[in-house]
Length: 262
Length: 286
Image (tube, rainbow over all chains, first blue to last red; front, top):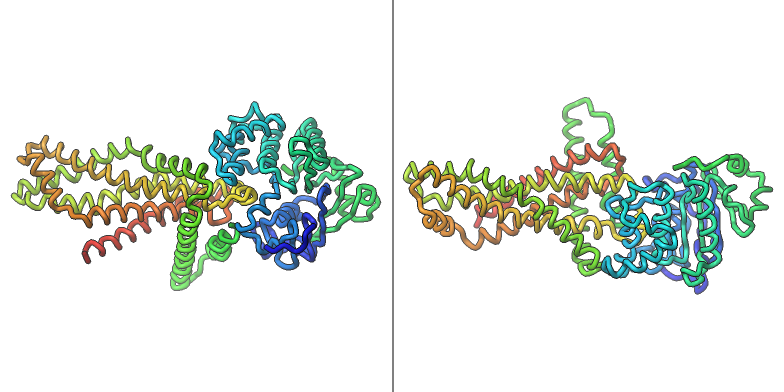
């Protein structure tokens, strides 16, 4: 991975061919041209199986495009290996459903990246984890395993695990799926605070990218929108531009009542 | 990390072969089986080399997290199995040693007692039985745990956190199982020899404990100790590699986990027998 310029875009894809997670040779999205600047909040809308997760996996550098280029913080992900671990850790990823480690408690799940990357003992990591759990209202569930938690709290624990290393870019795959109304409101408010600079993270303005199949829940004048439909990725711009777009996929998404994928 | 996994674990072709309709002729079937076996050997070899590379390269990385996991695995593949091995040692002493001691004494061939015990218990039965029991109890659990983690996407989650799945999930299991099998084998051998004598004593075999243990000690040489250590560690290494490979290496669905566990145990037994055969040749040569 080589640096290309001193002030790069957070994500920059040029003619990227996005392969499927379980078979990289199978293209799910073609010719993605997408630039995410620091501090932006992007909402990528698409139905199930439209390639949302695969796109995020590429944006995180966990997969490389079959053709074209994908740069994260100015570094080509094709050469993404362990020597660039510091760059990789600038990206936080919240998977759909959380994908927490079932053998570990919630506190251990959150502490895991911190302990591995900074070589800390459980006691040394405990303080940082406690503070973060308090912020995300997870303290009562610290000793629970993920299997004993409701989706609402599992998803929040996954967010805590992604935030514990204080990333610059946060990628979230359908974070509102399966959440109750109160929790959805909490997420929308909290993610907006991350974009504008949450005091817990020293006012650092995080770049946020979310995927969704319920684009209306993410309506906000300062967000950018894109849509995935039939193997194409279309950048639409602001909410007003999205509403005025004559894109068939947009009409379908705006008509969708609620998120249904779990 | 992902590159490593992808290179060693790309078994898409294997899956195609496995799921294809069975060939009609016997020669085609034999060819298919042979091809699958070669692909498995290739995958296992690559996985073993990658694991060795990670053990050497990342020996001190994240030691605060990995070392407790290694201790946990030693406990699982060693300490936790001590009660079971106490029972096995008693049974083996009763079934094998006491009868052998009694028969040899009756035939007036008690001079061969030491060498017989060393060949049967120290070189063969002790290590092989330990390996098979650990494979059955801990190896199966490895496949199920890792297979479930793989099916639920936990491996991708580890990679997203910048954690090498081989380092975090495999290395502790390999080290734990190698040391666990070594320790359990020593325990089983000592237990079997002692309990065997006790059962022989109950049968009024005219052999003093001093003579019995003197004969065994006389039949042992330094090579037995060295090869015993090497053999048990090799058993542990390969059992962990086979079970972890099947659990982690292939993209799995939840319903496939039990089938993969059966295949891993079968291959684990085959690997143990092959390793044992290599060591028999070593004993014969030396």
